[in-house]
Image (cartoon, rainbow, N blue to C red):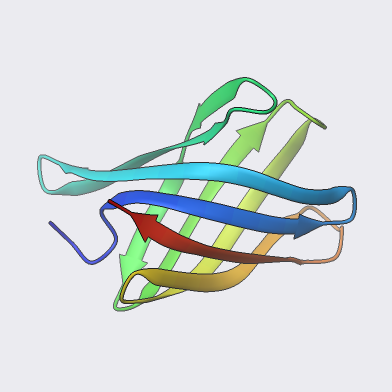
Length: 102
């Protein structure tokens, strides 16, 4: 298990309001894998370009709801908390925060 694995509840402060997402991270064959689930909009998407470098976690994901966007995330993990930013193309960065759930 790496410092990133587990289930994380994220809050993303976007221009269209707060979005709540469950991030599920696991290690498969020694590689970090993950999905993002948004129950409000009924979608689950795989994470791509998932990289953990020390406490820095980055990934990309494509969503269809509430808008069709390609997102990139850059967060820092501190124990069971994470903070950072998400970007959608040329839109301003959105603040991301979250905590690991049991």
